[in-house]
Length: 310
Image 1 (tube, rainbow, N blue to C red):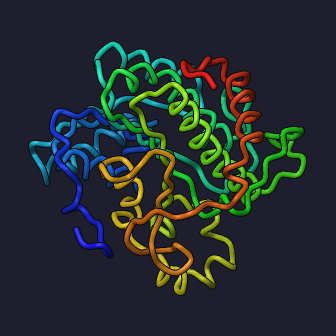
Image 2 (cartoon, one colour):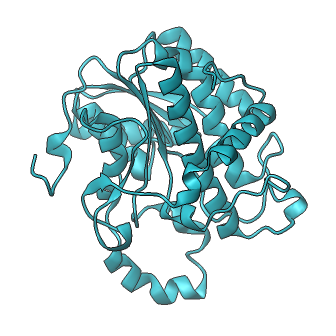
């Protein structure tokens, strides 16, 4: 591996390892499932739609017939679905090497999850918080396991407001303001989890990554906006493919040289594209008081008790 390049060829063997990828049927998640499976892991493709998941699995198997992929239903908008997924996984698997919390929504109109949470924070953070909690015993039981949360450059515009965390009744809501908050929440969670892991001396790593500007369908809620249409061509020149955008998360999940508490993203201008490297989030992502408050609120809202203490 050169100092300036990291790609598929640098992923170590994942034989006998178990990985979960949320949102694994499309975009960055699909690329991660494919990469993990090619390297020998058994991969659980967590998908809101079993039909789409099975089609995605079949498309990988056509290229790589030896791939071991199990499609399981997971709707992060519904805590009952999260609990059912975790119960099924914990019943069928006795280890978990990689949990890639990849699924998400971006700049949606104001809405609520089935549990009444604001949609973007509910799916992007709270659903993954609950999932990680319910799977954490498996992570603790597995040597050198990893949790990787996919954040975004948009976290830099995010601000936490615990007096109106979920824009109640749409108060103060804008699609980007909500998205930025949810992506900042991903980082606050990542670093707080790593602090708690280190305090307990666990053999688990908590990391985060972002894809830069990746060409996926995540921007579908803004594609019909006039400004997006005007800028679509220059934006495409600044962005990279989904397979390239997936590499920061893949590297965070697999590179043995990467320590816990790291944040990875593209190496290029404004971290929009390039090879996956360690990058720095904005200073607020390290705010311990905000992280503790978010943790407490996340446990209260989801009703889960995370099996790792501060």
